Length: 316
Image 1: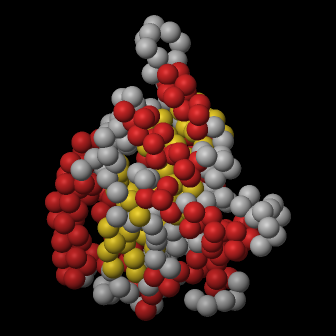
Image 2 (image 1 turned 90 degrees about the vertical axis):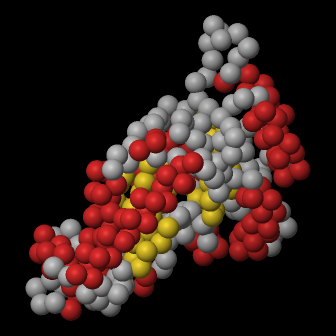
């Protein structure tokens, strides 16, 4: 995520939301997100007209609780809906005032990623009404949607996501009620700075100051998962002290995030290539958090990239 704010009243909290509103930039992954929410048991509707939001709210929370109703819903509402930009803020306030837990997810991606996706699918951009081209249409839509973005509980940047990693992200964050310390889910995310910093981290830690196994004979081609790399790093006083201070800070911050309404936190840990130090550190932090009662997972974005590039004859 590029930007996140604590979910407010009626938004995402410890319990899954009653209604998830999926919106964002065309080509940013809203369809893939919808599929993920369908797998989670949400009743999904694509391109719902804004005028039907009050009616739909009554289907989720009927006045007569004995009547059949929809348990949870995910609604895609985007720029295709003609009155979306002008009316959405007021409609959102009305929906939340009804007592429903509502989470607004705004999906976006870099211009480069969106241009590539439209090129691959050969679909016209829905905002291109004057033959202005894909890139200009993306920029115009991004500017037009800026106020909607500011209303979102979560802004999810999908530039680095595949369909599968995006689905895993959504399942981890919306798939279970409660769990972990105070119902909080934590994703610890390892990456390599040379492949670009992640856009979706609440906390970022840099471990490039630690001893680098890449320069140790016999360890270069291994990863931070390998016991030999772990032993090498654990043998360093700097590594042990760094992990101790990281976990102390995280232990202090997570309850404060939870108090402000966050039901999940993403922690990024980066080294140069994302293969050794960050992987070992992310695994160690995730294990620590699980021992503390959090629902914590470690995800390793770049652990295989160096090896693939070497096999292809590229840079190390």
